[in-house]
Length: 201
Image 1: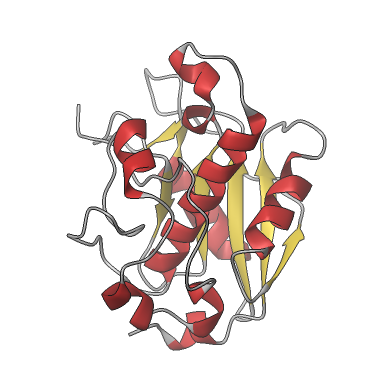
Image 2 (image 1 turned 180 degrees about the horizontal axis):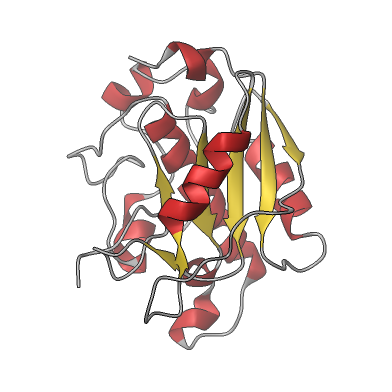
């Protein structure tokens, strides 16, 4: 069942983590708002820590999440959008991170972009994937665990291929446990995107 906090959310603020291209957050907020029954806004990420994991060219997702949670309010959820790759020490990378029942999450643009894999850059596909990941992390904020249904948006994805394969819809069981604002459309148009996390090194 969704937590009281997630049920009572009034809005979502997307905030930048590092330097993002102009218009990036606005485009993501507009796309995300089509999938939620909740207002999506762009906020300030000033002062968020950009601490790297020692010995790795990745930001510490745990530190970012703690900082975002400290700024979240009872009525507004925070989504940090990082311009750099993010991870936690025990994983090689994460697409995003959230705590079950929390008030904030963080996602990265890096591995959502086809250019990371040597393919031509595709901002539209990147944004579709990032929005899917945000919705996955919002599911965790609503206290959902990873789902065993590999066609559910709440299933674990340790690669971009698995992320794309799981699609953008919640299975019936997960959807029934979500707050109304997160359930979104009953049926969503097909698309190639969405993900969860990485495998341990």
